[in-house]
Image 1: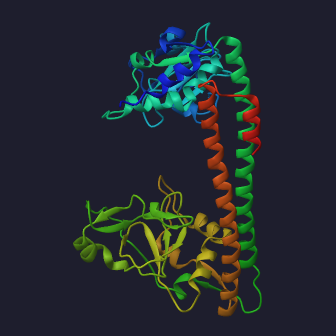
Image 2 (image 1 turned 60 degrees about the horizontal axis):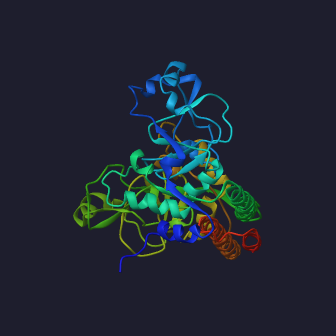
Image 3 (image 1 turned 90 degrees about the vertical axis):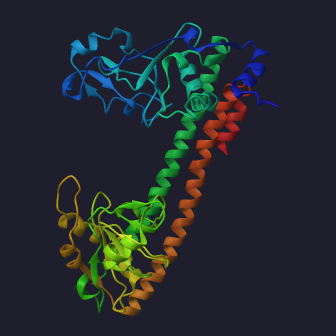
Length: 425
C-alpha cells in the first residue's frame, strides 16, 4: 500500500479545526533574482544597498546582515521585485545551505538578494512569522528534500516552491501558535546557551589546571628542546595519487582535539606508501602534530597499530626519555600554543617548519613526577568528558525538541501547557 505523504495527513487533521489548504504561491508573493544580470563580484562596493546571500541565514531566526556585500544604487534599482521589506522570509534554493530559511526583522539599509535566495512575502491570509515557522518545520523540510532526491545538481525551482502545499488556521490561531513557538524557542535558546556555556567552562577548567600544573617549575624540573628528547621528523609535502583501496594518507585535517580521526581519510597504494611515503615510519605510541593551517600545532597520540603515511604532519617518535602522554599534555598547553603561534610562517596557509618543531622548548619534570601528573590529568580529563557527553546529549535533545514542537504546531496538536512541560524538562 502506498504511503500517504506527511502533508496530506496534516490536511486531514487540520480540516476538522477550520484550517485551510492552499499552494504557497496563492497566499504569498515569491520572487528571485533572475540570473545575475551581468553582476560580478568586481562590482561590489564599499557602501550602498546590501546584497544578501545564504550567509545571512546563519545566525538564528532572523536575517543577519553582518556578512553582506554592498552594491551600487543603480544595481539595486534595476530589480524592484526583490527589494526587501520587514517580515519578508528568505529561503536558500541552491548551494550548501539549500532549504535554510530566515525572516527579516530589521534592515539597517536598503537590501536585495543574490541568485541563491528566494524572497517569500506573506499575503493577508497568512502571518509572516507563521509562514516562517511553516518553512522551518520538519513537514516543509521533508517536502524540500523530496524535491532534491536524485537531482544531479540540487536546486529548488521557484515554480515548484509556488506549488508547495501550505496549511493554515484563521489569523488569530496563527498568532496564538506563533506566540507559543516564540516563547518556547526563546526558552530553548536560553537552555542551549546555558549548556554551551557549561561545556565551555568545563573545558576552560581543564585547560587552566593543565597550564597551572605544567608551569610549576618545581625542584628537578628543567627545559630541553624537543629534538634532544625525541627524534622529530616530518611527512611528505607532495601530493600523491589517491586510490579507492589502499593505505590511509593522514594530513593535518585528520588531527583533531580528541585524537587521530580516520573519517573521510583518503588512500594511497601500498606500493606508493612503501616506495615514497614511508620514510616517517609512524608507530603506535608516537605523537603526530599538525604543521599547517588553522590547527597547526595540534598534537595527537597514535593509539593503534594501523599503517599509514603522513603529509604536512610532524612526527615525534616515542622515547624512553619522557612519558609520551606527559609530552602530549604539554603540547596541548597554552605555553606550547604560544610557541607555535610566534614560530609560524605567515601566508594563506600558515605553517610551522621542521626546524622550529625540533627546537620546541619543553618544560620537563622528573619521570616519577611526569607519571603522577599524567594520572591526575587523565582522571580530570575523564570527568570533563563525562560532562561533555551530558551537555552534548542535552544539546541534541533540545534540537530534537524544537523539531517536535514545530511538527505539533502544524498538525493541530500544539498546546501551551504541553510546550511549557517539555521545555521545563
